Length: 392
Image (cartoon, rainbow, N blue to C red; front, side, top):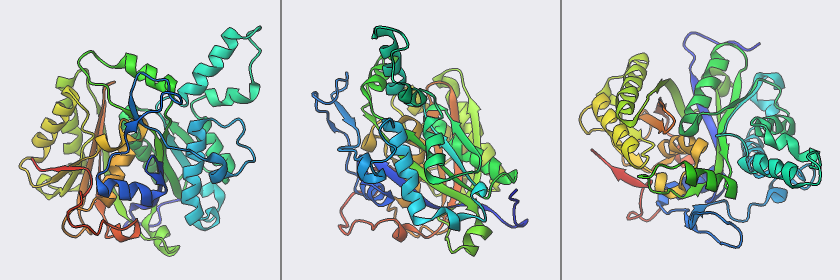
């Protein structure tokens, strides 16, 4: 059983990987964020029969090219994306070099509800077939929410704790908080932590019917972002340099958009207090920035908690559409790679999230000087620097 190595040790992120509509790898996601170019495009109606005219699926997703042909016949889209993304991370950091044993490497993977496409397709087959049991048994595992996490562990030999977390747009923060508790409790030394979301016709129709009458339909996106979380002393001993220090996470609940403002304000205040940080010390804020009343509540909460307008606020949601459970992970990536003027080392970054189901949360982290290690910033000085940058 792994233990914290010293009283002065801290939890850090040392690397990350992504698979997104912008391409394969963290470098592609970083380049897309820095350029400010949207991945949302017109959908081909012959491929996607959805109520949305636009979306951001991963174009020409080539799972055989990423994973090989063996063992992927019954793998659904969400599972394939997750397994491939974890593979990208572990290809840079082989599991034998991550920790002393494979049991010291855990996995925490977030999702909204697993593969909606698999669940609905399997149910349809049981209702339309000659007999209810005339279904493909090989596809049944895809209907359970932890299918992607389980396959990631089996495929890559991760023998530590394996957990699936679901919490809407806040999922990425919840998963990271859970990973930190695993490590502080001595259950594993290293955690591969992230989230995955698939684009499908079934998910599109569910989202369409779930939206409120006054909400504009936000194009859907997909992808996966996974991080490597570990103790700094262990990472340094193995030659891995931290990209960010994990200072604090906090969560809350609310009943309506009006109370979301106060719930998030309390979360941010608690996180700052736990980390020993004053509001005016926060340099960068990456809000979820949902449309409508929730977005307004988030902005007011940040004004209440931080005061003034010193912190730069970055908005990115229009770039990838609604990535649901991956949203907060993309926000963390924005904080890590956005080409904001000034040195990145020591910058305090706050990531906030609110979900329409009544969950809110935040993450406070201290950035290291690492941007040159994840892609290159645009050489054109006039290019956008990470989505819509505002300062309130």
